[in-house]
Image 1 (spheres, rainbow, N blue to C red):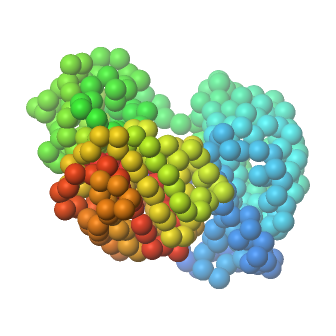
Image 2: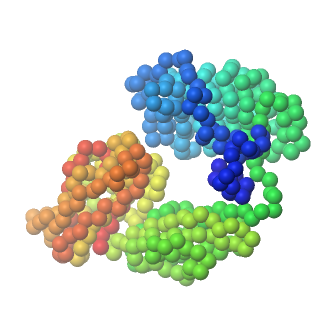
Length: 434
């Protein structure tokens, strides 16, 4: 929506109703400004609450369309975790689903038969799925279907003719499908009640660059981290990437990111791409975490959550899990926790930092208290530090990364023990020692 508005010269005074009826900006903006008295009312019953909760998980998010509405919207995530069963299980709420988002999932034509059972479906997103279009005829029973997105799929002109069997259909997204402009024009003439969205046309105006791409957004520094280790790239050739580490936003006068640069301390790096004749990109960031020491061994004396039962050495291997909650780099500790850490040679520590992910909506949150005990051995421990992690107000409904830092009384340490008081699942991917 913002892209189209900027492309249209970012006119603050222009009204949505003043745009042409087939204008992409008007079509998308209209969904945000629809009057409340035009909200659809549904005559089907709400889904059973137990069924609703059982079907919701980390990769299949099911939410009500609105407060007290029986209608549900379903989003599936993580292509690698997707199975046909994930779709088939939704038959338990087939009457309540009105919006289904399967974008970038490996959905095949055969699975459209399952989708056709969601009899009240209004909006279906199949962008960049593996469908060929041969099975679109199976969607004919969806008498309420209003929009279907097929961008990035292998649908053909003949496949799309099958959609005529759905009289309620008003909008079809077909950009990046390989369809010719002449074919899309013919479809528009043959099916005047359907708006075929074809994407953007080059009008000669400067185009905004994509942001620089990072494989991971957080890294561990032992001694130093080279520029190559960040694996920073850009899909467009001859782009210059500038960066800052002082918290300010980069511009074309900031340092140029290039080989030979090394980072040695905690920092948040901001990157921005520039190219002559283009609009500069949005900013992307990478967090760097210094860990001067590495524990030689580790033991976890607490319950590990079944879904996150990965190797405990993931906490001291210098590899972060990123934002993918299903990554095998995350360890989930359930309830009160005891972690023992051993150093073959004594080290002088002044802080211990726990890198964590919080997903409060699903009971994954930091513990109430973390205590750090340590000494030259188990029998000579003393309390070195305590921290009470806090979740910032307003972050209680989203997932986010946290670095929980516990300051210590500086002391020679060979043995360290972290103890917590907790009720949920504490997700950890690394512990830093400085």
